[in-house]
Image (cartoon, rainbow, N blue to C red):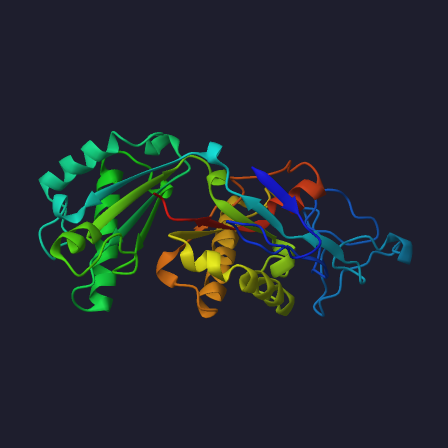
Amino acid sequence: MKLMKCRYARSVPGLFVSALLAAASVNAAESREPNPGYGEDSGNNVIRTEYGDCLHTGDWTPDKANIVGCDGVTLDYTIEVLEGAPTGLLAAVTIPAASLFAFDSAELNAEGKNAIEEYRKQLRPELSEAYAGIIIGHTDSTGNAEYNMGLSKRRAQAVADYLVSTGVDVNKLRVAGRGKNDPIASNETEEGRALNRRVDIIVVAEPRALDTIRFPSVALFPRRSAEITEQGSAVLERNLEESRELLSRAAYIEVVGHTDDVGDDSYNQELSEQRAKAVRDYLVNAGVDASKIVTVGAGESMPVASNTTEEGRAENRRVDVLVLGRVK
């Protein structure tokens, strides 16, 4: 995978194209190490007063002001851009809707289940071994656009439900409905419309197969919060403006929240989900097509660095925006 840490915006073909270096003031360090001069809770997190200030102990002195977010201490952060690597492996099959469903129906019939199994033999790795299986429903352009959007998602969900019934982990599956938005043939002929009525199953062996823009949580959120700060909005806006073309051409966008392993597992999972949804909502409000975005909370399950150091934990607290281009 190609990893870039850039101080200036630059053009990078085929992926998000902006990187930003800035200083961020955050609320407090999330750390296991003792913090001399500061009051701490049982997890070695710095305690804040009711006014939002970091709690000093009796032996605090200005030379001990080294906690990010306390007493004016700030952190430099870098937005990382990672280009998808072919070695991450992508496999895809397209199943005609006529092989799966009766006309205008989202109920998977016996023939449809057999069709899924036949197409499934072409997918490697098997879904149980992959990072994710992306299931996208499509329709032709006939009829009401809103109805088509709903039908396409119901059909994708029906395929996902069947796969779960065969033992696939539901947490590995992502479901999206694109309605008439992504035709692969002309809707002017019956043959073309039949091709456009389909369900795509895309297997992603590893996240690194997808283009990624990686935001450190500190760049977007206050500590232990999923509310994007004013500065975080500016960071997102800068990167969004540089990547609109890629986003408009994407077949699928996945926003994944991550935490370090400090604290309660269920709390970390919930926080990661909330932060992913906050970034998703920002993108949608900025004009990115909501039907192609799925959010995932990974909690502490996918570290990119060691959780035994503060630097490593800071890397692990992040939101990744994964982008899948057109699979041919």
